[in-house]
Length: 445
Image (cartoon, rainbow, N blue to C red):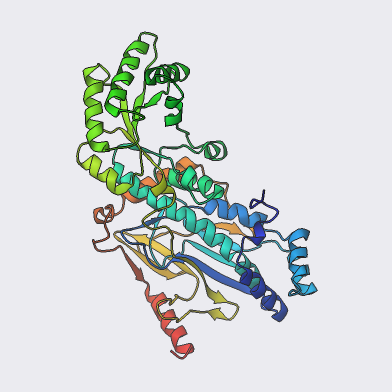
């Protein structure tokens, strides 16, 4: 079975990154170059993005190597010179990286990551960085919307079985936690990242018993501190009555049934009916957990309508970001050995020079690196120098808390699910505007 590993990570790249790198090496174009990784525009209905994936990006940059197997493959293509293969044999990423901390909110045109490195090296890591930062930022941003819809209620990431590949399931669970998920069903994410894991039971478990109530009884006894019973395998309301009976029976043994789960049907109507059944049976402390192709829109409708649901399981539409299944993240050269550069392509214009984003009260300012912005809080921080990390990895709880604070600090119009309100403003500083005009003039435009 083939996986992306430390041994082949450097080939997680588009082939033209390698051919361009050979051209740079052959022509001596190995001076320092700066690339910005940013998003051109927000997907529909998005009001902000949550930066995520930096930890895996930095870890990958420290491991980016072209071992003998990778070099032999390139040699077999009869396209690459001995000089370039020798360059790859000694390759180590020795660049400087500045980045927005994970969990911070970001907006279009603002660099999420800024890389300064010898031009061939900066080019070779493009696809890896775009994949790593873009995917997790997309999922964390979707999860943040779900968290807004839930208000004070919890949701759990249930997406692993529907995510687009094994690595997506693992990294998606991490990003969902950053964005606001309280736990994940993905056991590997619990092991690797320390994310709380959560699970109930499947319909197959209930169906393996001749009687539904016996399945409930055995499961609750096996997991006396965390039993959530799936009650919609047959008849949901009858399942609720059986769960209530088991809860009453096992309470005498000191076992508390924590909750019941609904996974199909008219969830709002059934949740109300189940709540009445549980309360009438003395099960007021038994929570109702709802899942089944949920997204932020359905959750917002239930929460806004006062449906008695305590927590949600969100799967497919979270892990695939169904309504916006890709993020238009790009990685563009903004400065090389000769100075600032820019792209003038229609609809794809870039801004020249090394830049810093500053957050002010109610808007951001994108400025030249080192330019003074009164009252602004710089968003980009140096995270790598000469290929070495400048700080230890941040705990996920710290990143998650940063996301919560950053979203809470947004203007209220942005903490909505629609995209109809006025967007967040990102202004260009005087210095950046002047440089842009000058580079345009130099390019004859």
